Image (cartoon, rainbow, N blue to C red; front, top):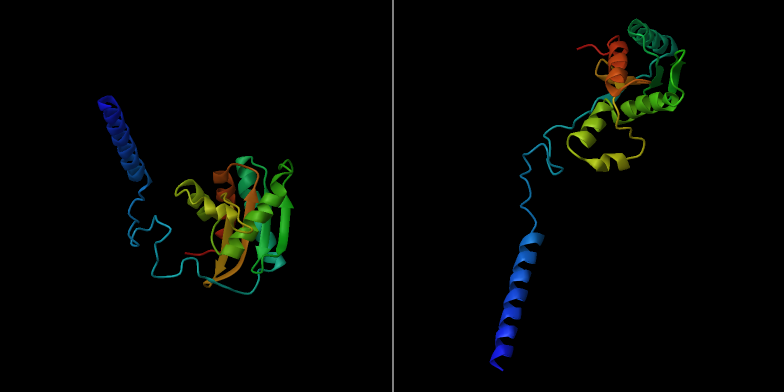
Length: 186
């Protein structure tokens, strides 16, 4: 009988200890303060990426941007697909350089479309996924989380976007930034 009481006591203590450990493991950490920009609960004072939409870029100007991108890519020995969308996310101009990979055709268009629709460079999405682990970004319609899409902003209004694809993300971004500099003035 005494032995049974000891076993029941030991078993009860083990169950209690297990319950305490489980409770400690399931406790949620305290939420980060709203003043920490790296949290999803951060509330900025101003709306980011709030440039309005302006008159759409025209075909001649879009071709000028493509030629600037081609010149930079040619200088470096790279082959790219380059797309320019207007402020309504409609394709205005496109060029596939000789030797550019076929898979990059829709990617260049997607980057330009994302940059104009979301009013920000596509690098913002890449950074959100890679640096802050905000994987939910990948669930948003028409997002591409890869560098190489740049909005075209003139007089504070978005007139379109350029998207480049065919190289690494940094190469894509460099070619697009070079061309976008014809419109985007500091």
